[in-house]
Length: 131
Image (cartoon, rainbow, N blue to C red; front, side, top):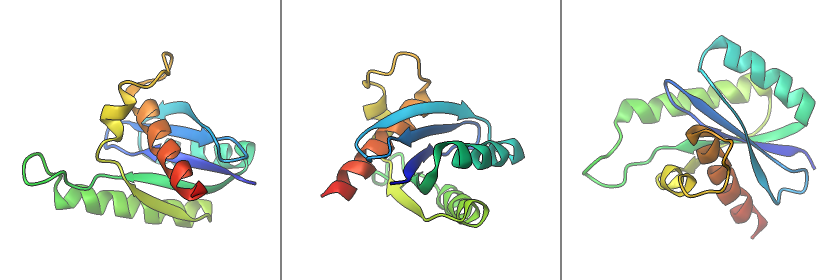
């Protein structure tokens, strides 16, 4: 099976995680800045790691207090659509409301916050897909 790429997208940082070929494990990979170099990095990563699908964290609001803006949701939707075109693979949006908090307790000592969040998001995606 082709691997799945998990992305925790942000305006300043993007966390990347990659699954194993059996879709059982998610591993933090890197944290990069958005922009053209990011897409170049993804194109190389797609070939090196045999990526067949992508899951992107979707920042749905928790409720009225602390909710994300409509613009942030649109930005993520545009980013995901751009990924579909550039990589030519399916891209899923997945609720990421709790992934950053869960990532803070994950055991990835060498990974940054956004990498951990991407790995947590990808782990949840893989678990749901396996059901």
